[in-house]
Length: 273
Image 1 (cartoon, rainbow, N blue to C red):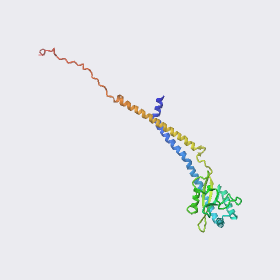
Image 2: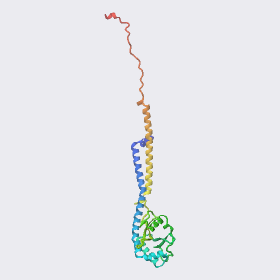
Image 3: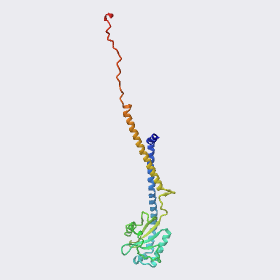
Image 4: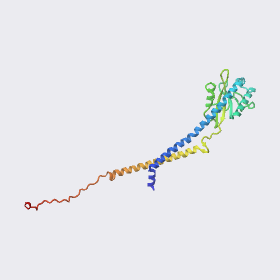
């Protein structure tokens, strides 16, 4: 039984099949691992580009139709009819586009980034324009992107990452048509329709990758066991060839000389004359 198992592993067909199956399972495992990352990137890019395109005309309309109110709000940072009108416009746009959040950010008198208006905070919310709140929305990559836009170094854009589990953040500058100055940044949090990128048609790619990785390990263990058995058989064969009959010189035994030579002592030469 042991000899049959060794012969099975040492077989060239078994080794070739295990090697082929191992490489195939490795490639498929890598694909299952990379596919969710690719799907996530595609989803973020699609939603981010669409959201940025939606924000651009909205930002242009705010600076075109409500420039005086916007400048007044920036100068005073106070609530009132101007603030209420701006919040109403943001709330309508938020509902129309299905954003999770829509708000304006500007650089206040202290030189820090602050929220100027938010679609979710009306006149009865107690919110004050210029108030810094919910720091998670204006720090890290988000803060750097807003700073670049306020300095005029970037236009409508989005962050190529998922924020807070399922949100994609996009931005659009509010540009003064007369002076070309960047007044504020219109920001939107767009929710992703799905976030489980590792599941395709009910198949969890992570679990498939784990199974394929196990198959890869098993195949290469089988391959190396077969190689070791082949090496042992090769050593045995070489030993037999070296010590066996193929390379053993034939023993030549000296045969006894059975030839008898007559000395012709009893022959008289005169008999032949």
